[in-house]
Image (cartoon, rainbow, N blue to C red; front, side, top):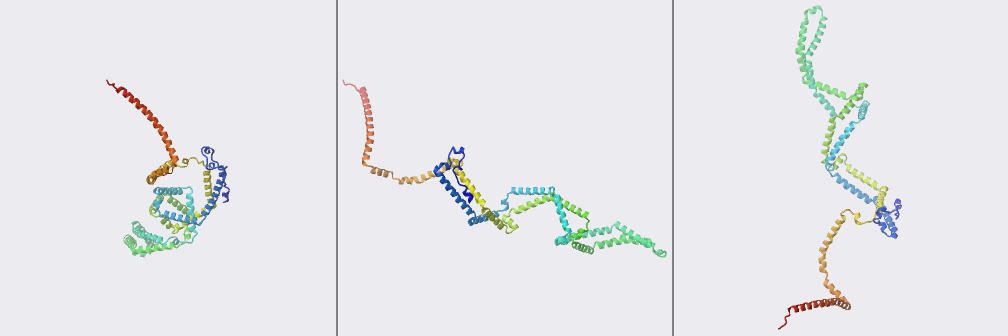
Length: 449
């Protein structure tokens, strides 16, 4: 608190603006000159004590407990709210637009393709250096799915092979090959054997075999369940054998040019997929569906889905952060500086009228409220007060206690003044009555004859 001791008030530093001071004095100027220094010293000492109290309160156990209780209560109140109540529809729309714009700007960046190619190339190069097999990279369910899809194609393939084997073009080719072998065999026979063996007869037998017996035999064999079963077993065994081979052996059989071409093709396909409108629409639809599913859920349920201890960790983090901030010396210094500046501002601010420090209409409201209170209190208590107030008794008491000499002098002075007035008015009235009677007598008198 050494910094606070330097903030001693002085009448020189506490001077208001000259234009304002001309209209009304400040609080310091309103004090007598001999009282200003003691008042400022008292305020300074009070601020110093207040600064020490603030610093001790910020680091006390009671403050820590109060902050812990406050944070716990506020976090619990916040976590009980549903996501739909916390974030309105406009905010959801803004969030959706923000995600869509950020995704488009991300995939449209200039260095995006090079970054994707670098990523794909590094991953493929990692495959060439690994001893893992395809079976280790794929799950058993994936391998079973691959076998199932291939097995589903066996019957159509077998039927197509049967159609090819029994087609006219195939039969003609097979017949031509057999006849060519027959010609070679017939040419090597002796003359005597040629007499007993007819070439035309052999050609006839070959044509009958190729055109009649062979198609029927091929269709019976290829379209039967036995061949399909054997083909399925062969394909499954081939897949298992292929899956057990190391990746580096499979990739090592590819030339360097083809290997680089594979990298470029994989990167190009991946970039095209990421930039496709379908993927952007799918992400948008997925986000909308996810937000709709999350809206009825509370914030506590959402964070506990990520980690069951999330709420406790958030509370502990906030409490620890607040206590760390409040325990810093600069926080207490900042609070006390603000308080000191406000006190200094209050001391140098011209006092003026009360209306200058109150909002417009506040005085009228206060006057109306005070008038209502006074009238209500008068109506409530005035009748009882009047009933209890003995006016006659007080008058009699005052008169009885008044000295007799002073009372007589008072009565005589009042009576003398009023008697003179009465005498004067009596003389005037009597004069006018006499004049009126004389006039009346003058006009109404008739002498007797």
